[in-house]
Amino acid sequence: MKLDDVDKSLLDIIQSKFPLSRKPFSELGKELGIRDREAIQRVEKLKNARIIRMIGPVFNPRMVGYQTTLAAMKVPTSTLSETARIMATHPMVSHCYLREHDFNLWFTIAFPTEDDIDSKVLKLGNILKVEATVNLPAVRMFKIVAFFRLGSAKNNAAKKGHSSAEPPDKRPSLSLADRRVINELQQDLPLTLRPFDFMSNNSSMVVDKFLSTCDALIKRKIMRRYSASVNHNNIGFTANAMTCWRVPPNLVESVGKKIAGFPEVSHCYERRTGTLWPYNLFAMIHADTREKCQALARRISVETELDGDNPIILFSTKEIKKTRIKYLV
Image 1 (cartoon, rainbow, N blue to C red):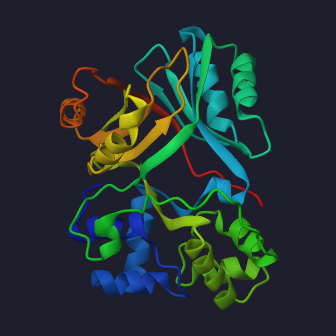
Image 2: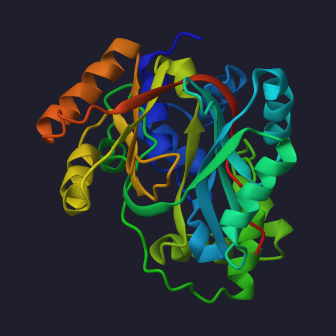
């Protein structure tokens, strides 16, 4: 699908923040200089072209009673297809990719906070009969900004991308209204002029109360944002590299913040290491060619004075699954 300037601006805007209002497509239309029904039609076409995956909420797992982790497995070639099929259907796996490494299958998975996540990940590896499994939970987050700029977005939120600020560790208490909204909101947005009327009716709430609860969830940092998820491969960002460094503990904070400042980096985390995986600083780099990803990784190493310890770069070779987990509360 060839994107015009309006499509590009629309994608820039809704990747960052989709309006939580009675008539969200009217708001988008005014910002883009088009009618509300045209805004709906453009979103529908972008979904049919598999550019927009879905429009919905992104919740902070810890704030709704869940924990997430990144894990990797060494899967024999003979069982790789079946293992990938199982992971694609696992309800608590949000992302799963094949990558160029002996650890060839990488995924993020969620469990309730009371679960022992190490034993759960190891058990999954045993069930799948893989050769080795590593669990790499986050120690610190420096950036989480899944924003792929296409045009000259008009609104400030789109220009900045998403906030990487995390709320305190303390889990908030959730009211009955909070729970109703959280459970109902976790679906793909209906493409109608008043989509939240439909959701509020399902929740037995008046729409103004439903929307004010949504706003409160964002202000309380329970919901990170309400936005569109896009397929970056289908908009030109076809080279995607998970890049990992071994960084001395006293330098992790300064280096992590430096890496987070690069617009080509969508995610940056300090993660727990182990005997099978000694790399503690992770960054996802996106570009239109492998060479550009590699050049940026080298540039980051030089500018952060890590050039003596070259990074390991794992290019994604196949997307098995990418979705937003439904957290029932």
